[in-house]
Image 1 (tube, rainbow over the protein chains, first blue to last red):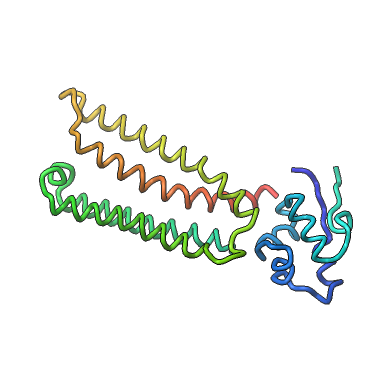
Image 2 (cartoon, chains in turn yellow, cyan):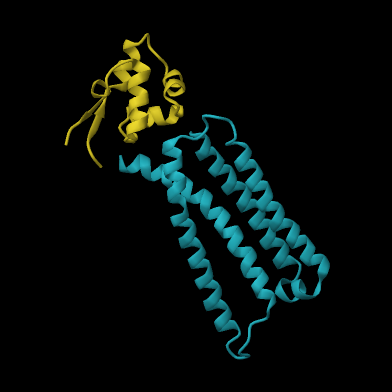
Length: 68
Length: 145
């Protein structure tokens, strides 16, 4: 599996302690997927990655980093 | 637990209860010979397996109707579940083939009633294996990370 790191947890707290449920709702996925992403147990599709970045109002690279 | 994962556990539980009821009725009512001759027995078995499939399908599908219940991760797991289904169906068919070949080797022919029983068993196994495939999918995704 490619090593893709993410800052979702930190970004949530930087955004008024946004809950996993709220982020899931903004990004159009389930809370369980946000949990899996935060624990690096799932690598999202490009589309979901963009939706998460948009939910935080930041660039994709600020949320996900490739450690190839 | 994801809604799809809950659905799979429910599907598995309902499927197992109906499969067990089906087996118990089949065994205690007299087995394959009675099944072939007794229409009342056949109706009970038909109600059990068709009822089980409908109950499983309705509960499973209704629980996933609400928007936002299934996302790309769930769909990925659902797309992989047929691998388990395929394996389960093949193993069931192998078991039937070996059992019937050995049991009826002397007579050289298998009673046609087995066609119906094999069909029922394949549908039940396939439904159970779909739920099992989804549960295994979530387990693997957590383990492989």
